[in-house]
Amino acid sequence: MKPSVPAALASPLKAPRVPGVRGLIAACLRFSDLQLQQVEQMIRTTPWAWMLAALGGYLCYREYATGADGARMQAWFAVYCFLVAVRGGIWVAWALRPGLRSNLAAMALPLMASSQSLALSWGVLCVLLQNDGPAQAEAILHITMVTVSLGGAIRLSTMERSAIVYVGLILGPLVLRDIWFGGSYHLAMAMIVTLIGVYTLLSSRELSRALHEIQAQRRRNAELVTALSAENERSRSARQTAEEAVAARMRFFASANHDLRQPLNAMALLAQTLHTVSTQPQVQALSEQLVACADGMTDVVDDLLDITRADAGSINPQWSLFAIDELLRDCCRPHQAVATAKGLTFELAIDPATVRSDRALLTRVVTNLLANAIRYTHKGTVRIGGVADNGRLRLAIEDTGIGIAPEHLPHIFDEFYQIDNPVRDRRLGYGLGLATVKRLSELLDLRVAVRSQPGQSSVFDVQVPLADASEGGRTDDAERLVASSTAALAARVLVLDDDQSSLQALQGLLASWGAEVRAASDMAGALACLQAGFRPDALVVDLRLGLQASGLQAIADLRLALNEADLPALIVTGDVGGDSLAAAREAGLPVLVKPVRPSQLRAFLGHAQAWRRTGVSSE
Image (cartoon, rainbow, N blue to C red):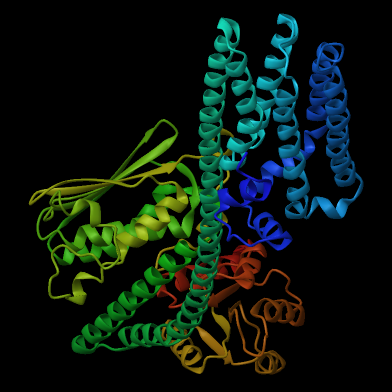
């Protein structure tokens, strides 16, 4: 046989032909991962292969030991048993020495050498059996050698040339022996063995290709997993960056919101004061425009903040039960005046009903939809109606305005998207109203939908959950601030606010209404007013008083100093969220967000005056 063991090992891997032991080691060290895996599998299955090899050798020995070739057969069997023992020793060493398990390249050389040595021993047996044996012995010999070659070819499938050498060492001498003896029996056996040998090698090659494909697929899967892990890490990093950006944007808007509301509050109150005290039509007209500008700027601030908070998931609805007809009347009152000024007919048709929602957020939704309807209606009617349907109150805000073309409908809830305002006229809004409606309606499950006919009308449907029958009698305490602007005023009011502009503006407005007002910018100043003998009928206190001072604590201290635990008190604040604001609402205190609307302030003072007369608390 020409191929030697080292060549059989080195050639499948195209290792450089280095003479001597160094060449053998180099060949072993250049095994691929798949080949090393098969080497490991060969070692693990050695006990079974060892027993089958021993059994096959023994069967052949027993059939030929008493024949003409008996002496040669005994010598062969002794060598064969030695080789089988060496193979078993390799497995024992591998099993007992854990260090060898992690060094498969070192185990490959003795394992391959022992395998090829066993194959060579079977080829030598064919040369030693120079006499034709009985039919039974010849059949056992052929079956055993074909079985051994088939098993070895499978175990060496990833090392193609080694498998060829292995099969050739076993079946080649057997076929030559059959041809040498001649006769129909041996020639037929030679043909059968040749076909089996070819089939074995072809099957071994196909198995090798399949295993290599599996290995390549595993490698691709590993690369894909690595790529996915890297992508997940990038996504996690991007998500973290986005969350940090959202948090930074929220901090900015929260700070900007508070800082913007203070001057807006002062401007609105000063304009209202000017409108109240002046009798000149021109001054009153200018003051009304100032109030409208302040309201418009407040709406923009509110819309921007609501959109940001909704996107960040930081709006927590304050669910409560309240009368929807009262809320709608409050929402419609200012818009009805605007519609009348434009020559529009404004209609409100709603039956009394109790709903479950967030009063403030639902007010924002309805207010924005009404403002949008009036803004784009130049003649005709704006109508809001409602009907109960399957556990929900279906509100419909209808107008006879310009309508919406079908191509614009998918975009009307986008930020800054306006259909009929190409020059960005601020009198037509900023394109934030419907974007805010979308965010808040998703938060409150209002299921807002729109139907429109271009040039004729638009209808916005809002579905508000009705209160359960068992809850119908309990309404929200927030309705205590609903009152007519003509309500009687509290005679004496103590105002506490650390913002001087807001303090002076609020003091001036209350004084223009005929109230007796004392103002202080800190707790020491408020206590000084009490020590001077001032006994207020109501307190109006800013939520944040600077240096971490809390308006809640200030109200508690003032009530204690006056020995009036139920003294009416109102919290005003430039914040629209946070723990302090939630604590104020949990304490049962009415809260007005700056800019304070005069009608809401008058409502609170009216309740305070009523409490003074009847002893019924406004809280």
